Amino acid sequence: MLDPKFTQIGKIDHLGIAVRSIDAALPLYAGMLGLKLHEIEDVPDQGVRTAVFALGESRIELLEPTTPDSPVAKFLEKRGEGIHHVALGVDDVVMALARLKAEGVRLIDETPRKGAGGAMIAFVHPKSTGGVLLELCQR
Ligand code: CMX
Image (cartoon, rainbow, N blue to C red; front, side):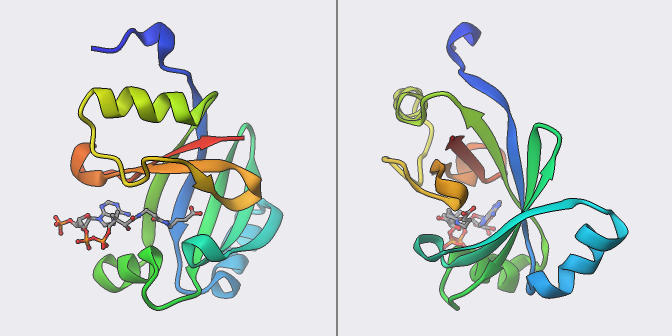
C-alpha cells in the first residue's frame, strides 16, 4: 500500500470526452453551458484535435479523432460518444509511473509523452483501474 503522503496527485486536471465532431459539440459546451473555450489544438501524436474548456481549477477536454486508427476513433466506434478518460494532475509524472509500475499496475505508457497544452502525459490501462482510462498529467 502506498503512503498517501507520496501520492502527489493534486487535483483532477481534466476530463476527456470523446466526440465525433468538436464543431457539433461547441453549441452545447460553449453556448448552452456557457463554458470558456481556452483553446483548440491538434495533438498529432495522439491522433486527436482537442477543445479545452477552463472550469475552475480543472478543465474539460473534447477529443475528436483525426485519424481512423487513433484510440479515440476506436473508442467512438466501440462505445460511442462519452467520457473517455480521467486525467489526474501530478507533480512528477516519471515518479508517479515508477511507483505504479512497482505496485504492478499495468501502464500504457512507460515513459511520458507530450499531450495537449504542452503537458507531459502518460496513460494507465483501464484493465488495471476498474475500467477507467486514467491519464497522469504534469503541467
Ligand atoms: N476507457 C475505458 N475502457 C476502455 C477505453 C477507455 N477510454 N478504451 C478501451 N477500453 C477498454 C475496451 O472496452 C476493452 O475492454 P473489453 O476487453 O472489456 O472490451 C479494453 O479496454 C481493451 O480495449 P481494446 O479495444 O482491445 O484496445 P484498444 O486497442 O482500443 O486500446 C487503450 C485501448 C486504452 C489501450 C488505448 O485506447 C490507449 O492506448 N489509450 C491511451 C491513449 C489515448 O487514449 N489517447 C487519446 C487521448 C489523447 C489526449 O488526451 O491527448
